[in-house]
Length: 247
Image 1 (tube, rainbow, N blue to C red):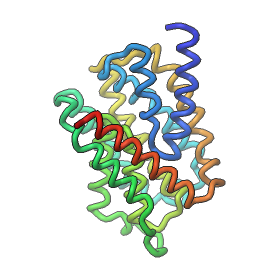
Image 2 (tube, rainbow, N blue to C red):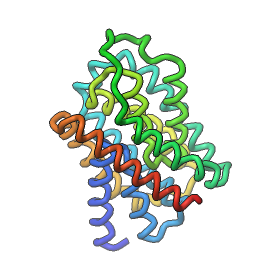
Image 3 (spheres, rainbow, N blue to C red):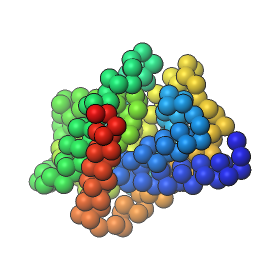
Image 4 (cartoon, rainbow, N blue to C red):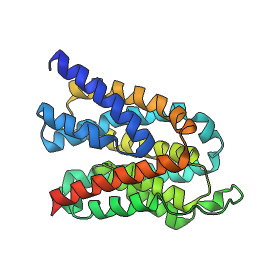
């Protein structure tokens, strides 16, 4: 690994951590970077997942004020994220990558449109808000996140925005924490049985952490509506790109 590759991974990680924590599109930057360096698709995927844990750590630390206001939700959604990440990592190891390839573009496209849907009316904060279908959907998205993860954040953010009256920063904080737990369990599995390239994961992880750490402060300050439009458009672009590759 050359010095330029290390610098490139740091910059790619920082950019991906920033974009991922805000828009849920980290893997769209970091995964192709690992492929360009020469890793195989599977090795790039598992190396990227291990490094993504640090993006979640950074963004979770940066969003502590939003998370403190939602402690009642962390347990249910966090558990769904953990179990989904574990299931997704298992699927990656036992099924062909084409299993999800044809479904993912449609899921991302619908999720990107859902980000723009009208919000629910404000409701009293309480644990009853996250009903069983929402928790099941979080599990399914986390399963996809453990399997590959590209735009899993867009899907999860769209779900949270559509089913709660929390602000965008609050929903974004829950999204980042849930994906952190999903990626953490998947990373543990990959560290034991998958071809993780640790020398590449390290600089990428440092960049992820730094990008994730500063992103919650930006989300608090950016206007909500334009940010949701940007997230939606970015997700639609990725959906089209993945659809072209899949079909």
